[in-house]
Image 1 (cartoon, rainbow, N blue to C red):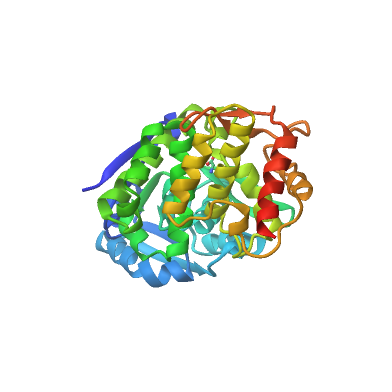
Image 2: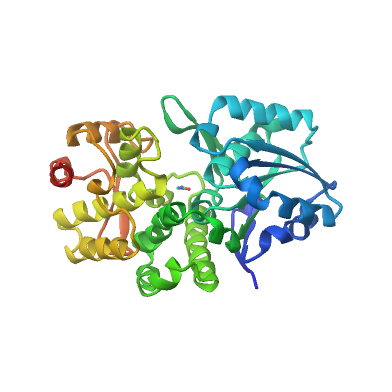
Length: 371
Ligand code: GLY
């Protein structure tokens, strides 16, 4: 049984199909979208080992011919060399304006293949087939595509909406534990930013979530996508409300930069720690009750997720340096950091009025716990 979440964007509207076994249904789901029976799949070597044969079989059953590009796995792939290689490969494969590119993989592949599709012949259509939890609930939805620069993460890119998203929840059962838990940083973010009941549901279903019960996963992915779809429909290019999706991300981006975008801290882990910091600062500023950050930390602890700076291995820079790194975030306007703060669980808002002394104090306390 699969669910459909619709992203309403006028001529750029699309569906997100969510359910078990959908990679094996990709050919059938995709067939009505194709002008000619020809697709190009971009994936990475880890995902290829698990899912490539399945997707190729499903496409070939529909008599769709498939070319495949397998890239190295890891964040380093989101870079100019792999990007130019991918675009040149799509041209060599004679992928035309009305053909379809399939991004099969996690956030790195989705962002890179989506950006390649955005610039190829000034824009060809593409389908996201996200295989990580983070990609299913966040990066495959909403049309942000791009690569990293030596100046920072995601600094080069384009908004290019997919024609379809196929989220196979069975793929989540093959993820390494650390990646799965990191992806939950983005799932719980949706409850924290705008849906108290969803956060409460996540608390109540922590055991079935941890055991990756198929129904629990399908509900969590669907609710996350519904919340994201509604926000993207209101604000496709992040002129306003979409910034709410950055809850925890100002802290996260500084911590990712401080740890060199390495295995020391996965993006979703940084989001979880960042959300806990955002709630702690909100409570100290008198915006929400102290119970809210305590409740969030208890949830993260129950889920065996990272919740504070001491959970990041080895040294971190000073609070001053972390705040400096926050100033390099994309969300800085006129030199002012725009934080996402909260008036309570499910009640986030964006503000430039954050007391940096409180931010420094919270960071210093957690840095002291580390040493
Ligand atoms: N990941 C945040 C956004 O899509 O806007």
